[in-house]
Image (cartoon, rainbow, N blue to C red):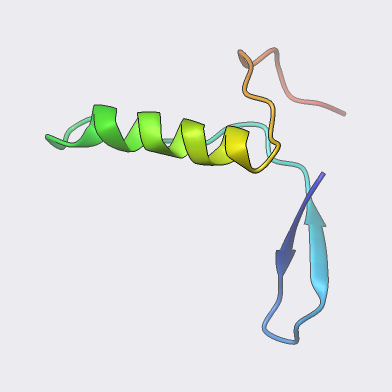
Amino acid sequence: MFGKGASSGQRIPAAIDTICLHGDTPAAVDLARQLRADLEAAGFQIKPFEGRRG
């Protein structure tokens, strides 16, 4: 479960299943690689999409 901060400062729980990246820019591949590295460094597990939970 991921939590995002609201403008009030309160955390809002959110289940994130996918992240959409646009591949129509010259730096798209580099952006995807960096995003993956940053998410993994933060402790998130990256795996293939297996369908929506719940």
